[in-house]
Image 1 (cartoon, rainbow, N blue to C red):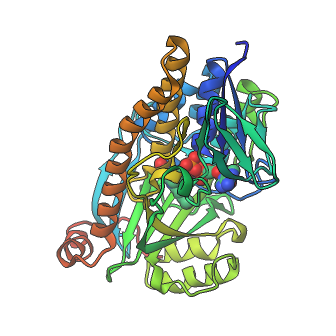
Image 2 (tube, protein in one colour):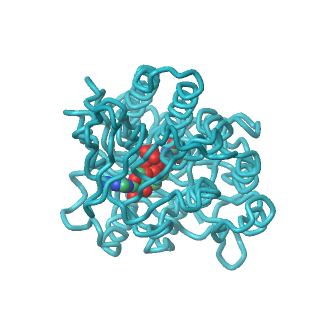
Length: 415
Ligand SMILES: Cc1cc2nc3c(=O)[nH]c(=O)nc-3n(C[C@H](O)[C@H](O)[C@H](O)COP(=O)(O)OP(=O)(O)OC[C@H]3O[C@@H](n4cnc5c(N)ncnc54)[C@H](O)[C@@H]3O)c2cc1C
C-alpha cells in the first residue's frame, strides 16, 4: 500500500510494542518511523522465549501481513502444553493445561519474533536514537527529541521505550514503577547434550515452576523447540529478512528476593551465574544441571517492578505503551502480551481517526481509557500471583510445597 504523509507517527523504542504498532500502521499506509536507542537490531542477547496468549496472538494477527503471522506460528513451539507447579525436587503439586489450539497460546523465541516484527520496516527503524523528551505540540504537532540534539516531528508521538522509559516522567508524571521484593536471574541452556534432550519426556511440553521449601525462592524452566527451523521458514515466508539460528534451548529463571542479590552483580555475568548456582543447591539435580550448563552471555538479572496507574497524560498527541506504562512481575506471562495488545489497540484507534477525520486527541484518549483498566488488571494479578507463590503467606506455601507434592508420584526421578 502507498504510504501517505498527511498523518505521521514517531515511535520511541523498537521493542515488541513499538515494532508491532509500526507494522499495524504500515499496513494501513500510515507514515511511521521508529527510533531505537540501541546501535543496531540484535546487539543485546534476548535469548529467551515468550508465551503468547490469545491477546498477544490476536494483536499479531491484526498487525502483521499474513505471511509474517504465519512465520510466527511456523517457527513457534507446538500449541498446548502444561504449566506444572512442583516442590524443589520436582514433585507435582498441581498442573494447568493450555488449550491445544493453534491460536490459543503459543511459545515463540523472542529474537525470532523481533526479527519477524522488523521485516518490511526497512528504512523506518532508526538506530542510535535515544529519545529524551517530547516537545509539547501546538498547531505544528509534537516533536520527539533525541540525545544527539536531533528531533522528529509527527502528528502523534508514542513512547514505547520499555521499563526504564526516558519519556515516562514527562508524559505520565509521578508514575515511576514501584519496586517489589523479588528478582529473577534468567538463563538459557542447550536443550540437547550428546544428542539427547536434557529434559525428560514427561516434561517435554511443560513449563515448570519449582517452589523451594522456604518462601521467596523458586525456579522456573521451559524448553523452546522451534516448530520449523527459522532459516527455512524465513526463506519461504520472509525472504531477505534476518533469520536467527534456531537451536532448541531451555530457558530458566531463578526467582529470589532482591535482598539476596549482592550489590555489584548486575553486569557481572560470572557473579550472576555463581549466585544462581549457590541459590539452586537444594533443588533437583536437573535444575542444578541447567544452571551449570547455561550460556554465560545470555544470563540476565531482572529486578521485578510494578507500574503505577497514570493519573494524567501531560502532552496532547503523545501517548505511551507497553512496559513503559505497566511493567509487571513475570508471573502469569502477561507483560509482552499486554504490550502487543496496546499496540494493536492504539493502531486501530489511529487508523480509524485518520479515516473518519476524528480529532487525533480523541482517538488517543479512547486508547488510554481502554488500555489502563486491562493493563492494570494484569499488573495487579501478576503482583498478587507473585505474593501467593513466593511470599510469606504461610498456608498456601505449605500446601504447595509440603502437602500437594506428597499426594503425587515422582515425575522426574533423581538420577
Ligand atoms: C526473561 C523474560 C521473559 C519474559 N517472558 C514473557 C512471557 O512469556 N510473556 C509475556 O507476555 N511477557 C514476557 N516478558 C515480558 C516482556 O518481554 C515485556 O513485557 C515486553 O518486552 C515489553 O515490551 P515493550 O515494547 O514495552 O518494551 P521492550 O520490548 O522492552 O522494548 C523497549 C525498547 O525501547 C528501547 N529504548 C529504551 N529506552 C529508549 C530511549 N530512550 N529511546 C529509544 N529507545 C529506547 C529499548 O532498547 C527496547 O528496544 C518476559 C521478560 C523477560 C525479561
